[in-house]
Structures are given as structure tokens and as C-alpha cells.
Amino acid sequence: MGRSTMTRPEELYACLYAKELPAQAMLRLRPQLRERPFVVMQGEAPLQQVCSLNTKARTLGVAHGMTKVEIDTFPSVTVLPRSHAEEQTAKSALLECAGTFSPRIEDRSNDTSLFLVIDIAGTERLLGSPSKMGKTLLRQVKSLGITACLAIAGNFHAAICLARGMSPSNQVAITVPGQESMALACLPLTVLDLPEKYAETFSFWGIHTLGMLAALPEKALVSRMGQEGRRLRLLARGELEHLFVPLEADFTLEEHMELDTPVELLESLLFVVGVLLEHLILRATTRVLALASVTITLSLEGATSHTRTVRPALPTNNRQLWIKLLHLDLEAHPPQAAILALSLAAEPGSTSKVQLGLFSPQLPEPMRLDVTLARIRAIVGEDCVGRAVLKDTHQRDEFTIEPFTIPSESSTELTSTQPRVAIRQLRPPENISLTLIGHQPKAFFFRERQYTVERAYGPWITGSDWWAPTLWGHEQWDLIARSRGGELLGCCLLRDLTQNSWQIAALYD
Image (cartoon, rainbow, N blue to C red; front, side, top):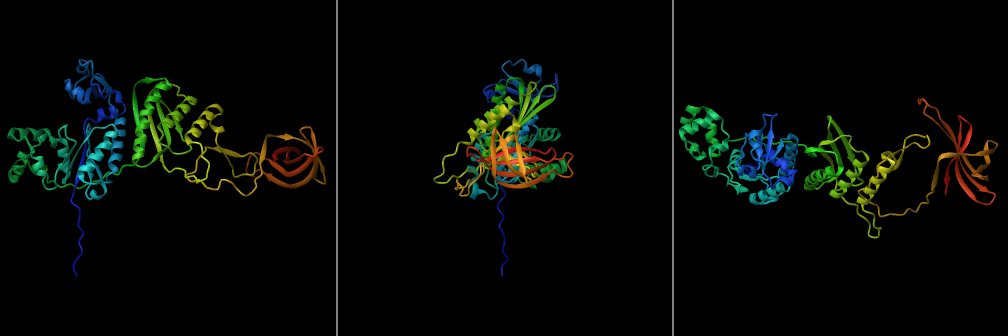
């Protein structure tokens, strides 16, 4: 009996490379700067230096490491300080995008460049050929506002080196597994990011490409450089093995932006909010989700912050609806100082829609309901709009107000066969004069009319919790009375046991 064997798919890695990440993270949220020379500077004044720049600035002669004084000689160059928070949100968006193609991702990024190595072995049936998968991935990355390239190879380190050495005109480079050495041969040694002492040694020997390094005899190289020489030779040949360590990143919908100048007008802030919302909605859409709530945090002058949360009745990806809701909420609760930065954090929700019956009437759009409720809250207050939910107590008028919600499923039964009694609650209850016979109500005066009780149900006695500091007690009667003119009246009478007074609390229709 033969032993069954399991065939393991060949290793195949795709390296997503986005250089100048600090600059791209800033331009991602500032599309108006894409057509201008642009640099990002880091450090404390007056020792600031250029850490990242775009292509238009590079064509003018701007280079990394230039000081603020040197940049001032280029009046057309826009300068912004580095924002690690914006870089982190851009990196999180790219990780989420790559995660839709494979759950196995290893992050090999450095200070200014992004390197995400994706294990795509065995995904051909789901994602198509490597070429098709690569173009789809780059198209989604471009929709996030990031320019990147992709290199695919059968060796982990070879994919990184190929991505480093790609020309700007190429977007996807695919190497057949087993032929990495030939593909790497023409690349310069700079793709290995060598320490300075090794770079000087190879330069002294006249070694300038990976092919020349791979051709060196192994024993002679080890005798001069030790095991590090052997490792570099395997790198140049595309044969260095690697233990893949996948990244386990949490899915968080958050965007951050630091403003160039303090903003005081709410209308100016909404333009920035719209850009951040667009990216949040795009990231949620890729996972077939919607935004259930959005929390906006404003960093204000004086090291203070202002936080507000908006939650509509139904999760939605309608950008205009979110802008309107945030606008109305900030108008009702404006910040007390100029705004320096803002963050948007969203809670994901289901995109399921309400399924109506064939003969069900058309319901109003949830967008109109949310905007109407927001306008009412701005007038009457946050705690006065919603649905009443009774508390677990017998005390009268004890309830809380909860936000309106729309259920994900709707019943086709729009009408009920059971009769319902309409109750008109009187707030506050109205005092009355009452005639008792045998401890039961027989007649009373209400709103200048005399009523004779025909039927009386009760009493029901309720009292406060024994551990409560305040005491209350009521005796409740449900009555059906008739006036002298023949008018019937159904009502609920309350007797305050602490004060021995009678009141009408509700009318039954």
C-alpha cells in the first residue's frame, strides 16, 4: 500500500514597494499639491532636513538631506513638516488593501519606504495569474492615492531586490521561479542596502552589480568577509532562504490629518472632513462594509481636544450624508478654539438593506430621517430625541431616550389583528376632587365637568424600592366614567399615598 503525499505549492511572493512614503502620505490627503514641487522635512528648527520629496521637486535639483536654508532657494517648492500619524494611517490602508489578496503579509518597511511582501502561493485559482493579480492590486493601491510598483518572484529576498531595482516606467515585474539569479544579475549593489564598510569593500574590488557578486567564489568570499559574505552572495543569486513571519494587523478604520494652518471656520473644516471620509468609505467598501458610526476628534490650540460621535439610524456609505450629519453636530457643539489637526475613526457595520414586501408601501429614505433627527436635536437637545424605553421599575414616568434604529429585516405584516388602546399621558398629572363611597371612586370633577363612575378597576398599589433614599407610593385606579351630557371618559387615577391627593395621569381613547 503506497503512502499518500501532499504536494506543497511552490513559493511565490509579491513585494509591494512604495517609495517616498512620508511625501505620498501627505499628498494622499492633499490632492491639490500633486502638481507642485513638494518636500517633507523632519527635525527641530533650525536643523530641519528633507526626508522625502516628490518627482517634481527632484527634477528641480532638490535632494534628501537639504536644510531649510537650501530649500528656501527654491521658491516654488511647497514645504510641510513630517506627520508620523498620517504615515501610519496610509500604511494601515495599504495593509488592508493587501490583506484582501492574501492573509500572509510581512512588513519589511524602512523609515521612508514601504515594503509589503505578500505570500501569493496557491492563489491563482482565486485571483488569476500573477500578472492579473498584480495589476488588480496596483489599481486598488492607486485608488488609495498611493503610487507603487510590484515585483513577483519565487524567493522572498529576490522579490524585495527586484522591487528596489525597478525603473519608474515599470509597474509589475514577474520572474519565473528558479530564474531569480538571471533577473537579479543586472541590478546594482545598492538594492541590497549594504552597510558602508561592505559597500566600500565591493567598490574597491570593482564589484558593482549583483551578477558580479554572485560570480565570486564562495570559499574565497567567506575567507575575506566571513559568513556575511556568504549571505550576500546567496542574496545576489536569489537563493537565500527566509522564514516567513506574517503580520497580524487589526482592522481599524481611522484617518488623521494635520492642518497647515489653524482653522476657525467650520465650512473650511468640512472640505478636509470630506477628503478623510472618502478614504474611510473606500476602505470600508473593499471589505463589503458600511460606516455605522463616525467619531471626529479635533486637536485644538492650547493642547485641548474636542470629540463628537455621530451614529445614523442605518449604516451607510453615503459621503454627503456623513458630511451633513457631522456639520449639524458640530454646529450644535462647536469647538472652543482654533483647530490644528483632526482624526476620523469609524465603526464598521453591515451593508444589508431592508427587504420590503411586494405590496408594502415605500418607506422614506434613511438619509432624510437622519438629517431630520439631526436638525431636531440641534433645536431641542440631544436627550430629547429618540424612542422611549421603560426602566425596570414601577415608578411612573421612568424611562430613557435611546437613538432611533432601523431593523435590518422588516416584517411583511404591517397591520395587527389585535386591537390596541391609545393612551394620552398627562404631564404633569392634573389634580381633581373625588367622591369616595366605600373606599371606591364614585364621582369626580375634571376640567370643569362632573363625571359619574360607571366601572372601576383597582386599586393597584406601587411603592419605591426599600433601599432608595426617597419614598414614593401610589394607588392606581382605571375608571370608565360618564358626564352629564353622556360623554364617556376612560382614565387612569392616581392617589398619592404620602399626601392623600388624587390626580388624573392618563386618558384612554
